[in-house]
Image (tube, rainbow, N blue to C red; front, top):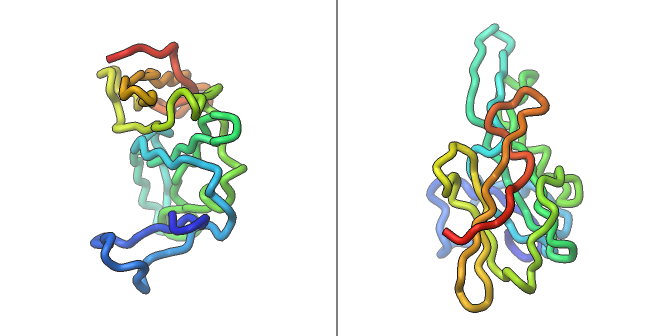
Length: 163
């Protein structure tokens, strides 16, 4: 994020330069009320068949956010677009308010830092963690109920536990 806008930085981007011609503005809307969380492939798998009939199945990358006003955790799946030769579809990132709620909330005052490094509990499902003001870490194990036939898609979080 630069300012209030969401950007995708090209491979090789670093903190020294601000923007390159290959960096992409994903959303011109205001994302300043959200904490960005990168859980990796947290929305199951996606299968795409392109115009030539080639089918590919990949783990579906996802962006999570914590809405600072409510603490809600929202998911934004990054899919593939069959109409565009199965290219990456980042359209879910256009509007921060249009994410899918996957967690009831992590209070920003109680846990000023939230994040994910993927699967912390070893069950194959990405998890969420929070750090309180004293530096203690709490983990909310991701749950994957698979209601839409997406194995591994995080649909919520179990009760928290300290690692």
